Length: 331
Image (cartoon, rainbow, N blue to C red; front, side, top):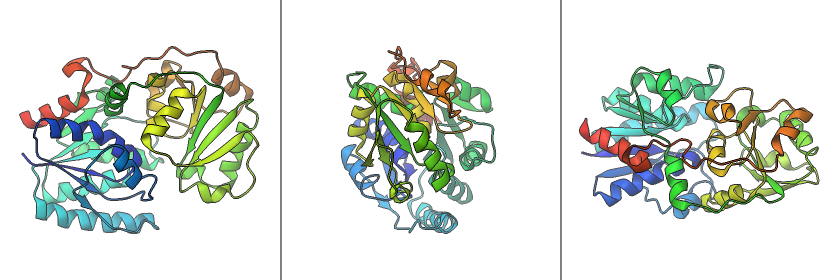
């Protein structure tokens, strides 16, 4: 069987790592297409090198305009799929690359496996929610990271979360040092007004905060930032795992980082109005921001008990990659 994965963003490089390793170890034919949706050296080439991935096909599509990228990506993927003719296409998460890969595969008539299916914030004004709903509806396999996600769709398969599989392999040492980690990347938080609101709020937190600046946000940080915020470029995955392992708390609008809050055992304040990973909110690992003093008092307890298996199934020895590939091979 010829398996083709299509990725293009930082979280997808991370998600695919256990799949890549499992297929390589078991001599399963698996190729990777990189749309380079979020291309910059720090979030693409450096991450691929850090994770020891091998990219078989790389699309060279400028991503200066979202609609133009989507149109060109679908066109390029359609031609590539016709040429390669894989037996199944794996798509990951809820990005524009996910949408393009799923639509192109559907039009060519190739079965789709959606990894991280079924997650919902129940707000169709969120672009990622539109992608999730659409891709779930046309996929042959919908592999879910959480039991909650299985309940949101008719044909969900609970496999657990691929990043939790990777993190348990890395098994970092956890500490609670006196600093926070912040990442901001969503379009809703990328206006000068909203970013200033976030930074002003962070200025009221009595700890230094390391802001790892996404390429969309970095140009907006030309103005002076609060003294307790130290701006860094995007870093390797290995370095980010170290920072999340060592910090006292996390501030983010990233679903992927929110999802891993239980693994690191760190309180995580979410810079969004709604989120998909509601289990982390229910278990008090994560909280949606209200920009009030209550957020700060919630964010800074002495210690939060961690759960390194929070989003893992005990099937296949806590290896979602094994569940996913075995299910696909079984048909």
